[in-house]
Length: 231
Image (cartoon, one colour):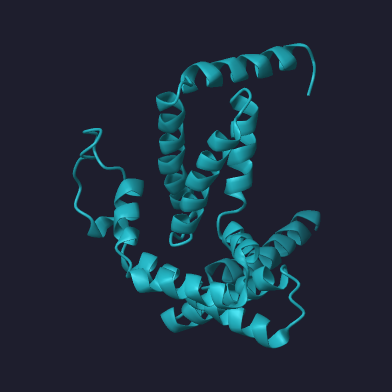
């Protein structure tokens, strides 16, 4: 009787579960290109609004105007980047180093061909309503504060940094920041800053400093502090 009962229970379980496994699950509706773009547009507009709001302008008309300027630029950078993948640039070598172009190199080349008017429209739109420091604050949002972060590093690495040296290095970083806003990914933004970091190191070396020596001394101090249990 017990065996018969177990058999009946087993048959019931099999009969109720097998169809569930065999039944095809409903496919998730495909997201159309138009829907994906609309979602991305909303995200860019939200980002632009947040960046402008951080300035606390207390002027709704001006904020709306600036938000449109920034959102338009963000969308243009995205659209150009998406329409020009690295594969649109032929593989080759870096003419300076002779090394093969990486995918990042090729993407930078592709994105750098974006019409200059995209950048010009951003800068003229910002400068119309903002002062120099406010424009810098918006550009810092694009580049996640890399100017301040890099300058902090230079002040720590270069002993007795002079006013002229600091002004020159800051000038390089500000150039990097303005150029980098036209690139979509953080990897590309970092690569643009690396170009100007190299210029900075070359400047220091050409003016009586030894960048490698200073950097090695700085890292040695950090290692010693860590070994001593200091933060």
